[in-house]
Length: 261
Ligand code: 48F
Image (cartoon, rainbow, N blue to C red; front, side, top):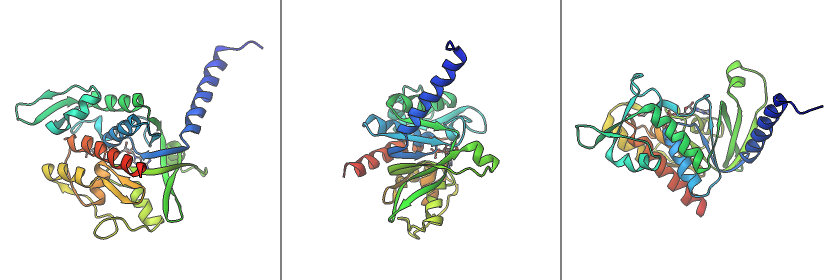
């Protein structure tokens, strides 16, 4: 039987994807969520030669970047974050107000995704992380399933990803750290040992605390972006993204240090 284009195309996709997934089952860093902070972290970690993959529930990674503020698709960043945007070759424009810049939120989302992939990070989209692997008192990886399986409530067992470190980049709900406290009963490195919960909006305070709160909360378990802020009870900040970008950069440095030990 001659090889048809139909068969050639389908088998190429299946073979290539299976190779990518097989390779992604054992990682240095498994990242949950593909928001702006996680995408910066993924690029920085992959640029250091680490094996890193993002598991993103939605079809399109980018998290809360795409919609700008109230669907006006522009965002604002501060001076300090420009080196991150420049590394990704994402364009920005200075505002009249000194220290602030605007950029197109669609260029930001697509630029961050492209940059992370080009640096060597893998992105598995439409994949939800439903649990962690927790062995001998340590977080060892993730439990994953297709988002449609999760959404339809299908009774289908998941697969697992093993990793040296796990990064919770799930945004406001801190889904992975919450799972770890509720199911594995771990005590976090916070004043109460638990999640303190996000406070209402206070832009300057929230921006600073996002970066401060970005760190390791349990051996091998890190949080960045709004997830870190929720864990440590920081303020929210809305459509200003400098803190998110700097949080991704900071956590990549901390994880690299941890892995070098
Ligand atoms: O919330 P999100 O954009 O992450 P972030 O880096 O950025 C926050 C800002 O977008 C914005 C803000 C800035 O001022 O406040 O909110 O903290 O993206 C989080 C991503 O994680 C995915 C979710 O679909 C989103 O794209 N996600 C959440 N839980 C899971 C998940 C899960 N269990 N499995 C896979 N992906």
